[in-house]
Length: 210
Image (cartoon, rainbow, N blue to C red; front, top):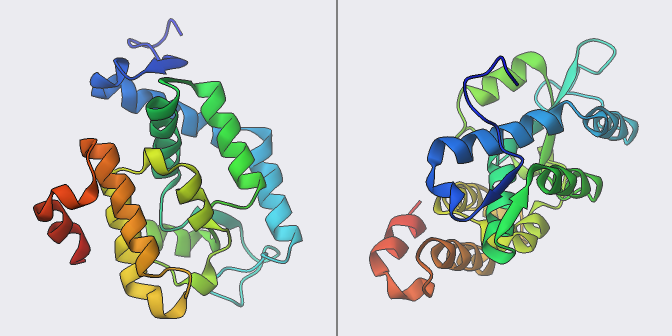
């Protein structure tokens, strides 16, 4: 656009991600376009049609009383978009914004994204403290499947969030077992350092003591 003083690329490669600002703009552009897509509104309507029409925090508030918004729980939509992009870069070597947006649509369609329906006030409250995780019974979506599917895009930051969540709620969510914790760190460590997880005891200790 002639009104901007920087370019927003639609195509990115592993070499290009060395420019952190360019990479951040690429991911933010994907998030922006996805949120404003027709599908985003359709998916919200689909969830409400399933009966998810109440705030998960204020259960007496439904969509006839206030706006009910989709909250990407555990991982933000930026985290998920970055993970998908990283997976493409680490497996294919390149990514376009069209590819990333289409994959975001597909993963929402397959209900692999962790979503909680919240009223606007509760949504703002949760975003004010991103460590204030919602319990598993408030979250819709088969998010462990998402992690396995895009395992080559899991960063240390994403792994840390997942481990914090599992540590807090593993008793209430049997699938979040020791095996999942280990596998998340294995892929994060491999993606970060290109080496097996057990080669760095310092990293292991830092991220398993959450």
